[in-house]
Image 1 (cartoon, rainbow over the protein chains, first blue to last red):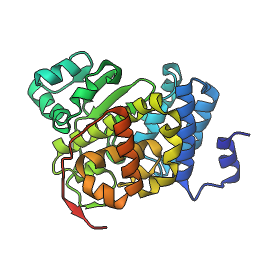
Image 2 (cartoon, rainbow over the protein chains, first blue to last red):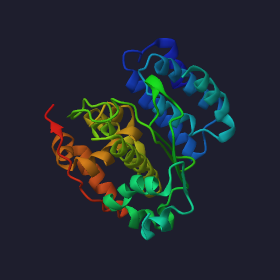
Image 3 (cartoon, each protein chain N blue to C red):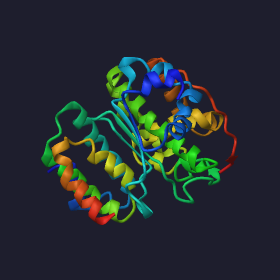
Image 4 (tube, rainbow over the protein chains, first blue to last red):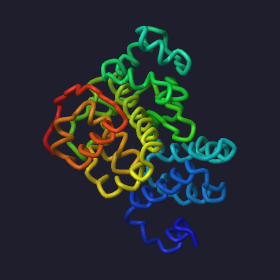
Length: 86
Length: 201
């Protein structure tokens, strides 16, 4: 079980949205820059963080930064979703 | 744009403003004194885009930086309330909101995105320090946005270093010392603009 799914399933960090964002953004960014981030994990992290964006615990600007750390081919579905909602 | 700025930006800049307006925004780079560092080929970013806002309303996006693409994007419009706000350390939403007017707010966002770019350059010098070492101190950040994660913390620290260095040293001494060491390691010397519109929070 990945950290993202742990957070989703246990709700352990629901009261600390910044902590969850901080942890997952660090993983996504570092792994992206190391070239070891997979599209599956990228999608999973962004999906995990999306409810925090909806509840305005996370800034769209910071969420977008994470979207842009993915490979260009991975980004479109997330950008399309964001543009349709925000 | 000055000759110095032209040399740095001629190949990487996209702007929907005219030359005079673009120069006014980019003047901040010369004022800060970052052009000598930024003009070195190893330190240049891939592109800088100055364009109108794409995202509006409650979720305004003022700027974006991609570590992966090494690109800076800055929005050219600011809503009322996104500048001319009183500065209380740790409480202000973003340090760009302290700006006296929209142009200064855009410039502060440009400095923030430049902070990300500097952070990215740090990675090649000291990978460990890139992220992990900052995690324990982001709660001391100058703004709410800077407390979100290590990347926004670092970028807001750079804005604080440029605009509010005196307060930075007092209210986040660990971050101040860290950024000071990082800038020294990267050979970056920037001016202290010494803004003083500070309300003790």
